[in-house]
Image (cartoon, rainbow, N blue to C red):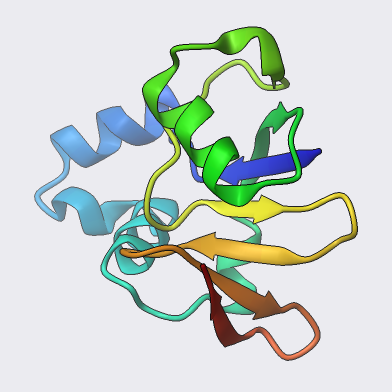
Length: 123
């Protein structure tokens, strides 16, 4: 089983981004989301921006990505928050044994939650 954590903006945060002259930088959680989508390293501060959005009944990262990106078989997906997005770069996936990965531009990067550093890329 894989838990997927995402940075999902609230309607109020989206409204602030759209109305502020600062645009995307008006909301810290959006800055974190953009940083991760650009391949920047996960930091402790960013962890507070994530919420558990889905649980996927698989132990395979690629399958979890496929199921929550293509949405062609929702029978293995449990939605645990009001809002979700298709899994993409910057999302965090936690396996049943506690390993944490960030969805990268290509594949997944294992995160050492004790050090909060990217350790290696998983295939």
